[in-house]
Length: 284
Length: 215
Image (cartoon, rainbow over all chains, first blue to last red; front, side, top):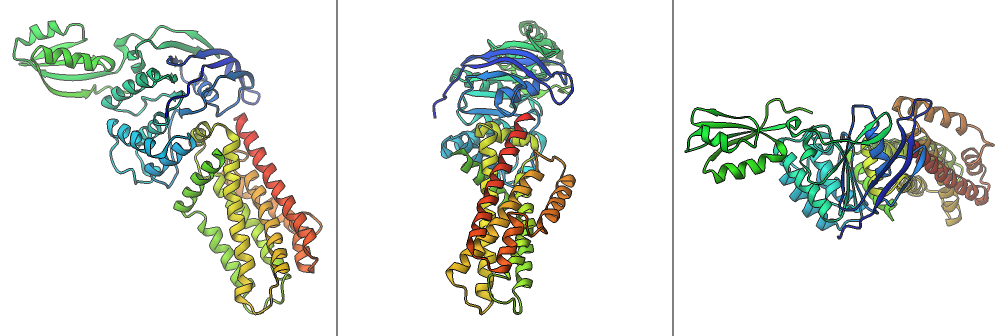
C-alpha cells in the first residue's frame, strides 16, 4: 500500500502526571513528510512521553496534535510481551490493525526479520522471545505497515551491529517513501542518518542540538588482511578512526554508520575482510 | 472497523493462552451441580445460574482487558488509531463470551432435565443471564487495567463489588433479574435488566478508554 503521509505538528504540548512537576512544558515540534527528527536527552527528561503523545497513545494535558498520518508505526522504549501468540500471528494481527494488506505485510515483515538477523522460530510464543528478538518483532510491526508516521523510541536498543546497519537503511528508505520519522536515540547511531534534524529535550523544552560527534557512536571492529604494506593501507584508510596494523593484518575501529564505506574502501585497496564484529564495549 | 480487528487480536490470544478455560470450566461445573438431580421447572432454577454468571463474566472481562502488557498496549493503541477502538474491541470479546456462557446456561437444563422449555421461557432465561453477564463485564472492565493496575487490587475490588451488589434483590440489573427469574415475572423486567447491563458495560468501556488517555 502506498504511504499516506501527514505533516505532524505538536503545538504547545504540556504534560504532567498528577501533582508532579510538568514533564513537558510547552513543546512545539513539526515533522514534515520525508523528514527524520532525532530527539536526544538524558534519562527521564520526557522523551518517551513526547513520543507517546506524538503516536497517539497518550493525550497531552494541554496543547494540540495536528496532522497525524492515518497509519502510525510505533515502537515503545522496550517491547516486552506476555502474549501467548507467536510472532507470526502477532504481526498478522498488527497488520490488520494498521489496515495493511495481510499478505504484503507478512512478506515484508518476514524479509525485514531475516535482514535484522531474527533467530529462532516465528512460531515461538511472543512471551518466550529474547530481548533482541522481541525488539526485532517490534520493529517489524512498526516498519512493515506503510505507516505515514513512524515513532520509534530507542529503536537501536538491543540490536547487534549488523541489525543496527539494516535499521539505518530502513529508516532512510521509509523517509524516502514519504513517511515522517520521529525517533529517540542515545546510542549515537542516528548520527549516521543523512539529513536528519537533531533536537534535545531538556527541562521540558525542545532545543536544536548538534548531532553527537561520530567518535561517540558505537564502533565496529573490522579485521582486514592486506597484501600491500599494512602501514600504507592504514594511511589510506585514515579517514576512518583507529586503524592499527597487527602483523600482516589490520584492525580498524569504525563508527557504525560508516562501516559500509570502510569495507568498500578496503576492498578497493585489494584487502580481504577477515571479520566484522561490534566493538567489545558496545553498549547503550 | 478497527474495533473488530482489535477484538480478533485479543480473542486469538485468549484462545491460545487458554485463560478463558478456567471461567468456562468453572461455570460448566456450576451448571452441572445446579441442573443435576431435579432442579424444578424453568425459569426459577436459572436464577442461581444467572447469579453465578455475574462473577464469572467479571473474571472473563478482567482477563481479556489484561491480555496485554501496558507497554505493549501502547503499540496496539497507536496501530488501532486511539484508545476507543481498543476499548471497544475489548468490550466485543467480553460480550461474545457473555453470549456464549448465557446460551450454555440456558441450553443446559433443556438437554439435562425433562421439563418443557417453551420459546418464551427460553427468551426469559437468555435475557436474565445476559443481564447478569453484561453487568459482570462492566465490573470486570472497571476493575482491570488501565483503571486498576495491580491484579491483586483488581481481584479484591471485583470480589467486593460482586458480593455487595449481587445479593440485593431490589438492585437492578443483577438483583432484579435474579428475582424476576425466581418469581417467573415474565420478560419485561429481564429485558430491562439486559439493556441496562449492556449500557453499563458500554459505559465501563468508555471509562476505561478515558482513563487510558490520561496515562
